[in-house]
Amino acid sequence: MTLDPRFEVALSQAMEGGGAISPAMVSTLIRSLENAISADVVKNVQPIILCSTQVRRFLRKITERFLPSVVILSNAEIAPSVKLYTTGVVKYED
Image 1 (cartoon, rainbow, N blue to C red):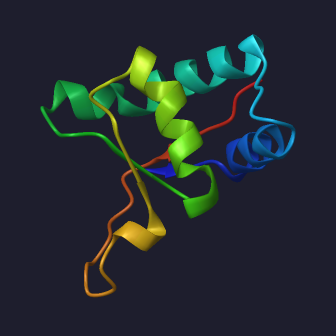
Image 2 (cartoon, one colour; image 1 turned 90 degrees about the horizontal axis):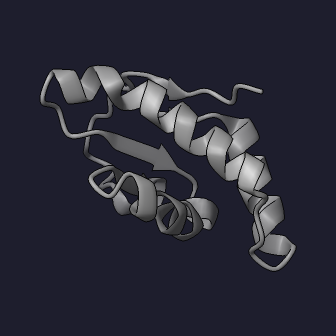
């Protein structure tokens, strides 16, 4: 799955601002992740979230407390020869 660009922007801005992200944003992010991966978990498929290199480590720190089994990867960690198939988007929902 991919990460909604609005999450990418919000996480990038939080990193630039010293790494602080609001509890409301964390809640929105976790809820969106849970909604996005629920179908994969039911199918016994390992959920993988693909995001930018800039926010990967920050996103992993956030998710490891709430969703430790979700794999977070950046584009740079995937070999160019690998064919990717997007199964969904972690949507930013207000």
